[in-house]
Length: 109
Image: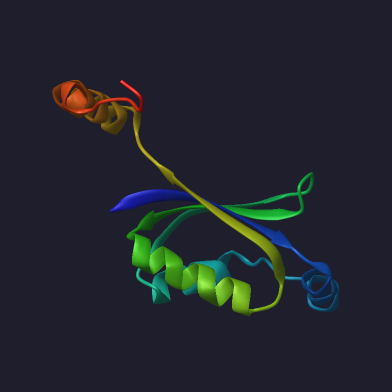
């Protein structure tokens, strides 16, 4: 299972809906993630970037499912997802890199 940081920028239609029916969107977001077999760990709103920002755990296919549904909803103008590694996982990747680095040749060398 991977960890993901998602940033979804709301559009004008979303803000119209928020004004028409103010509500805490956490439960709705969590329900979407769970339906796609992804676990929502945190959800925030950034007033400086007008984005919903979420941290979740799951696999890539589940994440793509969420992205498709979110963009199809028509309330987001942009959506970006970043896969995250713990520092321990980065250390494991470094060890793996050290083991295979000699097998790679840079272009032109």
